Length: 214
Image (cartoon, rainbow, N blue to C red):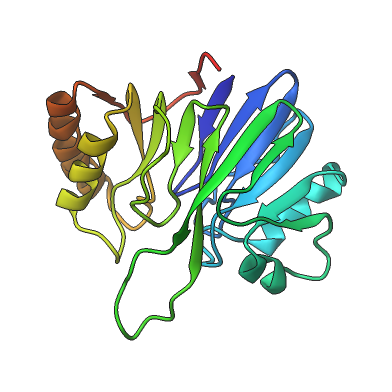
C-alpha cells in the first residue's frame, strides 16, 4: 500500500490498483486527482479545511462510482452534485475495494465555547494507518502509521506530543499543518521528534510517497 500526503489534512492510499482519498479540503491546494480509480473518499468532519465539495466533484467527474463516506452532518452539507454519499458513524466497518475501514471517535476536539460543536470520525485503515481527524481519539488496535495533527486552534504542541507517546506508532507523519509557516513546521517537527524518540517511534515529514506493508 502506498501513501501520498498533500497539503494540510489530505492524503491518499493506493493498493491493488485502487485509491482511497481522505479529507480533500480547501487548504489542500496541491491535491491532484489520482491516476488510479478512486474506490472511496473519506471525510472526517464538516470543516472546509477537510471538506471541499469542489474537490469531491472533481474526483467524481473522473470516477463517478467513488463513494463518499462521512458523518450525516457532512452528507447534509455536500453540494447536490456530489453522488454516492454514504453516512457512517462510530463503530461502523466498511470495505471499499481493497480498503478495510473502521470508524471511531465521534467528537471534534473543543475549540472554544464560541465555536459551534460538530461530529468527527476517526478512521483506521487496513489495521495499519490511523487518522483521528480533528481529535485525540485513541485507536482500538496497534498503529503502524499515524497521521498526527500538529497545529490547530484546538490543540497546543504538547497535546500532539502526548498523543504520539500514548499511541506509540511505528511511524508518525505530520498533518493539519497548513496554518504554520515553513519555520513553524520545522519548530513543531522538532518537538514531535522528541516525543517520538521517547515513545520508541519514528517521526518523519513526508516529502515523497510512503510504502506501507498492509
